[in-house]
Image: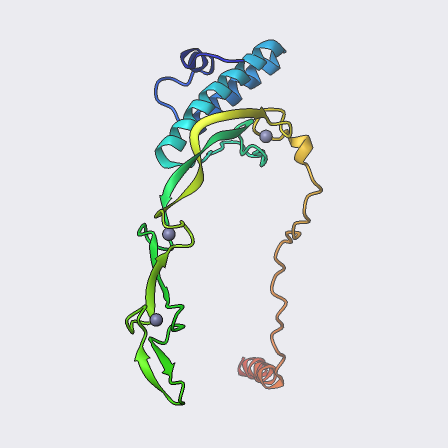
Length: 227
Ligand SMILES: [Zn+2]
Ligand SMILES: [Zn+2]
Ligand SMILES: [Zn+2]
């Protein structure tokens, strides 16, 4: 189902300035209202409106930043669609990018194959012995310039990149296009929480010291005697 952006905005009531998060929040409220009133056909229209706006916002982000992020307001966000309710596929295109091996030059320096990177070669005499000469090919430089093997001398290579144009969208089956998972689907046996016990009063015992008791007893004794 395709819908005009302005119409979708009206259905969700997102106003003139909105973000992905805001759209999802508005969708949540609108969808919940339709469901509560058992207006199932209208709930579908709400989903369609959300899709229209989300596609627009996602493509806009992709065009600006080359990637998109969905800030989901849902607690049980569906991991499969990241809360969008749909899975997006973008059109790929091939672009020429600079070769990272030769840095766009198309040529690289490599060991001279004639002298095997030594810069010299030994010319042997038939009569025995020989002479150590400078390599004629590299002129003793050991390296020669060769065609870059990565770009075949072109300086650029083809790379497939995703454009900001949607190729297709698929309804997320995991969350039934909602963007979040209903509680019953996610309810796992809750991890046992450490039982919060009321802190017991400190059981530290005051060491019984005979000296102290003695002195106390003595004191009492003295007090009685003094009376
Ligand atoms: Zn989903
Ligand atoms: Zn050489
Ligand atoms: Zn290259």
